[in-house]
Amino acid sequence: MWKDFKAFLAKGNILDLAIAVIIGAAFAAVVKTFTDGIVMPFVSKLTGGVDFKDKVWNLGSMPVATPEQIDAAIKAKEPLIMYGQFINDLINFIIVGFIMFLLARYAIKLFKGLEAEAAPAGPSNEEVLLAEIRDLLKNK
Image (cartoon, rainbow, N blue to C red):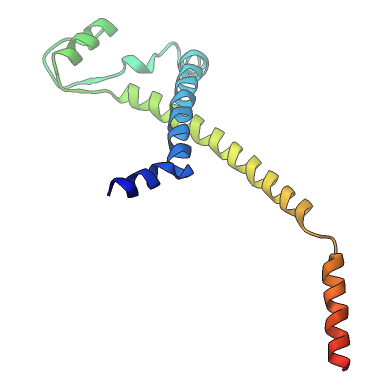
C-alpha cells in the first residue's frame, strides 16, 4: 500500500492539483479585493450609498443597526439572514466566472492556433517515399 501511495504522489497530477489550489486561493483573494475595493464602491454609489455587507434580516432579539452590532450578534450566534454578504459573494462569483471564461476562451483559441501550426501542410518526405515503395510493390 505504501508503494502505491508513493507512486500516486509521484505522478504529476497531484502536484498540478496542489499548485492549482494555491493559485486559486491567491486568485480568490485578488478578486475579493477587487470586488470590495473597486466594484462595490461603484455599486454603493449607484444605490445611494448602500453597503451590502451591512444588510441583514434579524431573526433574533439583539439590535443590528450598525456593523459593530452585526458583529456582536454573529458572535452571540443570533439568527441572522445575511443577504448582503450573499450579494457580495454573488458579485465575486460572477467576476471570477467571467475571468475564468475569458481565460478559457483565450486558451482554446491559443490551442487551436497551435494545432493549426503543428498540422503538416502536406505529406512528409517519409510518407512520399513509403507511398512510392508501396506503388512499386503493387506493380510487381
